[in-house]
Image (cartoon, rainbow, N blue to C red; front, side, top):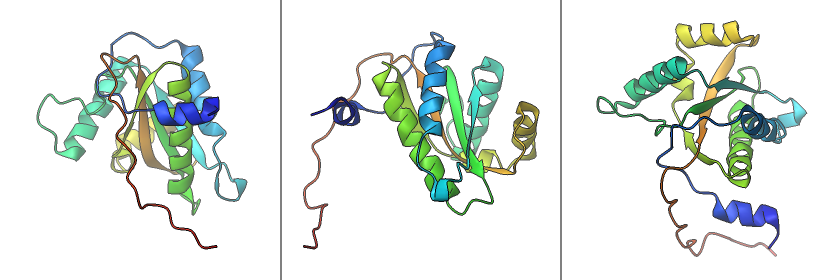
Amino acid sequence: MNDVEQCIRERRSTPHFKSDPVPEELIERVIEAGLWAPSGMGRQSVRILAITDKEIRDQLAQENARIMGAPAGMDPFYGAPVVLVVLADKKAGTAVYDGSAAIENMLLAATSLGLGSHWIHRAKEEFEEPAWQELLKRAGAQEDCAGIGHVVLGYADGHEKKAPARKEGRVFWVR
């Protein structure tokens, strides 16, 4: 088994993060992996908003929890200090697929770099709100972007879950 296959098998969602900051170089490497993901017709529709500012991160977590209908005080980002919001140009017909491919690349890159990560939903609903669209504009995003998902990053706090056995009967051949 090669390194890529090993990384795919070892990647797990991190349910608890330490508050320790993540070096910017590692964050940039995770982002770069997302930018190299395949995209429909090579359009490269994905945009990534990197949030390391604790106040903004906490506001986004509150918005995510509200959309989710989570109980008061729940952090849907599991304490991760970094939130990478994956968005895509709304005009791209493959926006959701492009963003999903970017997210998977980023999750694998995080694993390869010794970081914990977790794919979080509800970015679509968040970034339909004017306040979050305004944040995108302030950050320099020019297009009208749709939220696809979040990759939360940090150092795992505790043991990762063991991978469950793969279910049988999910591959069908036509020969």
